[in-house]
Image (cartoon, rainbow, N blue to C red; front, side, top):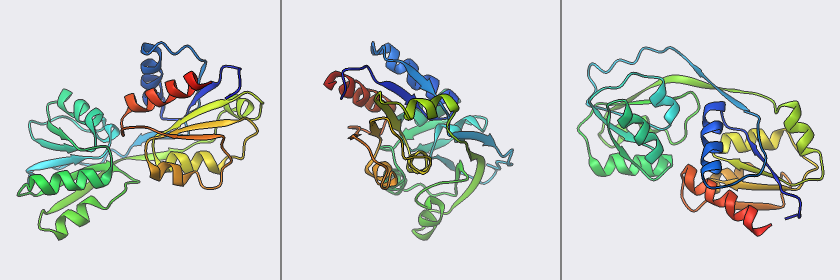
Length: 231
């Protein structure tokens, strides 16, 4: 990486981006951070009926935030989502950070059901359909949608300069949206949460792609720190 300290560009929804920036600051990272959310979380105001449910499934913290809490079992995609759910009163357990591990965790626990998958408009893995097919009746409800946005003018200008830019990307959708707005002139160093996120970058020219060791924000921050240390 160039001798110039890179800019860290955060493209998550603003609340998530600010939380990640705080995590970087707590680790002593002093590189400049720019915010340019390319996804906005918009609640759908859907009716969440738990009358017949014996438990719920959360595949994101945004889904947790969109509903009131109940003293009920909740299967969560990862530890951050589980922590958010516990804070609202759910009896939450965590999978390993993706749809497949979430499906496997519910399957291993073998609840009687019915379950309710509380999710965003765009979701991976068809959890409700797959669980219902194996005998765990599961319905779903969409409580938010992800509205796409263009990069800010500040971000576009930074991406067209010669100084390096580190871009942490947490989901395939975000990676695809970022790639669609390229190519960029700046040397790009991308940190991804999973192989699926890396694949979603497509043919976007990048200097480096670093895979986080775990599917969690702290591991993503550690990967950013490693990139900075390597520079």
